[in-house]
Length: 171
Image (cartoon, rainbow, N blue to C red; front, side, top):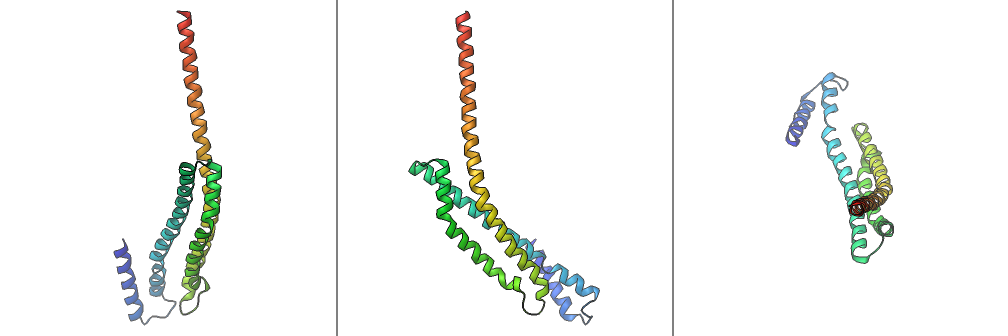
């Protein structure tokens, strides 16, 4: 797919350089409308992978605190969020800073790349905020779910034992 996209960009570049048509012609519209597509895909994958890495690092840190240091789940995820906040923020700010030249948009053809830069910066900002808020919430929800499941299993086993004792007393 990437090779096909690269070939398409090369063909579009040849068409643009050899086309004496005016800027508002149908050829230039077709050519320029296809150029940013591979960039969108690659950069959305970057944003998603960065978000996933943030969540994985927080959960991994919390699990290590729970297992090795004997902390409770709420304390472990709170410490993970506090300790990992700075590196997570720095990573996201670097990625946002790398997209700032696109978002500011200087130079020839910048009006075509500027929406891409704005989308990258906005997407990184929103994804970081959602990840920093949702990861601890999901972690604690999953922990509570495991506790409720174990309690339900225990109640079910107790009910079975009582039922078996009732049958043994009747016989």
